[in-house]
Amino acid sequence: MSNKMSKPTMNEDSYAPLLSPWRVKAKISLIFFVIIFFLLFSSTQTGVDLGQLIWGLSNMTQIFDKLFPLNFDVLGPAFDRLFETIHMAIIASTFSTLIVIPVSLLAAHNITTNWFIYNTTRLTMNVLRTIPDVVLAVIFVGIFGTGVFGGIVALFIFSLGILAKLISETIESIDMQPVEAMRASGANTIQAIAYGVAPQVMPQFTSFSLYVFEINIRASVVIGLVGAGGIGQLLMNQFSFNNYGAVMTIIIVIFFVVILIEYISGKIREAIL
Image 1: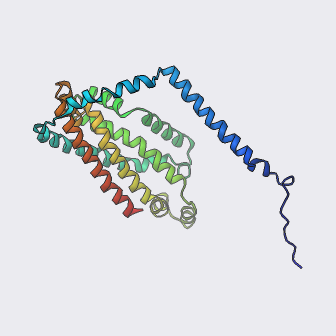
Image 2: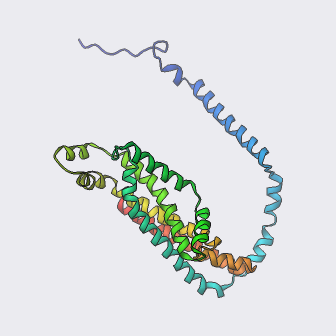
Image 3: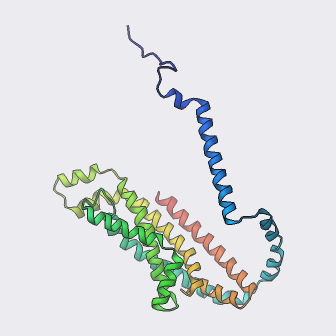
């Protein structure tokens, strides 16, 4: 005769109070009211006024009157600067993808056992990631002057910080048993990384690289506003001359190109993953 495990009663089950419906509802309600409190407090501190928002939206007709009709004379220079923007993103993404390989390995605690090297690399990447791309562009435009070179350097550092975090965390989550087996069989560090680590992270590595390329396309437009080259610089020039029809034309061109690049990149990621 087999003994069946009897189901514990509510008094005997130590997890029952945590799973009771009223406790779950109370926690959800508490979180909801805390969020509402901080939202209202932040709105009060920053002077957010819903009436002012509605009044501002009513002025949209004046903005659209200035943005239309479109100025198609700017299409030629816009496409020239657009290709320049794409070139900037390609160069910055390529070099950051290459440099991030050793950097991400040094920033992964399961690969780098040296405490000083690991923490120094993580700290450096964290510092780079906290600096906005526009601030980087201002710094390097001040160093190298206006033009694409300062923008490429800014995008490179910006991309490196993002990729290092994403890929190092991916490396830290891999299965270390194949790596340990290879080391036990006499493989050196490079062989263990090439045959034990790389196959596990390659799909995510490719996906993250494409994702950063998409980000660089959008970021290169923004940093162009501070003189770092690309279509953003042309956009700022037209805006400074109050040529709003040309501004709207450039915005539409940027919109469709970004959508196209995201679509192609998404299809490539789907094929890889």
